[in-house]
Image 1 (tube, rainbow, N blue to C red):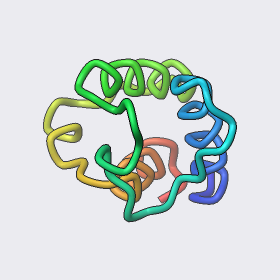
Image 2 (spheres, helix red, strand yellow; image 1 turned 180 degrees about the vertical axis):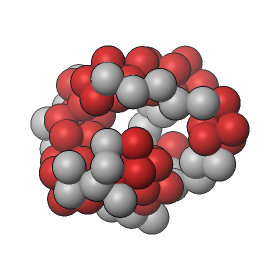
Image 3 (spheres, one colour; image 1 turned 60 degrees about the horizontal axis):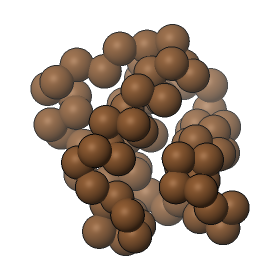
Length: 82
């Protein structure tokens, strides 16, 4: 899976979880850039991403995530796109 495909899928997941259709994810975005993103929403995001991609994100991987770009890179590595 390419990084472009990952961003497209992450955008769909985020828009669904946040009940929006206008979120456009950028690599530098953080939780502070998305209204309503809190620790509970992060759990929902992680679970949805794990289910969609059929992967498990380890706690040390999650701890390293600071931006959407970090998230996309971890997923690319786990899905052999990176």
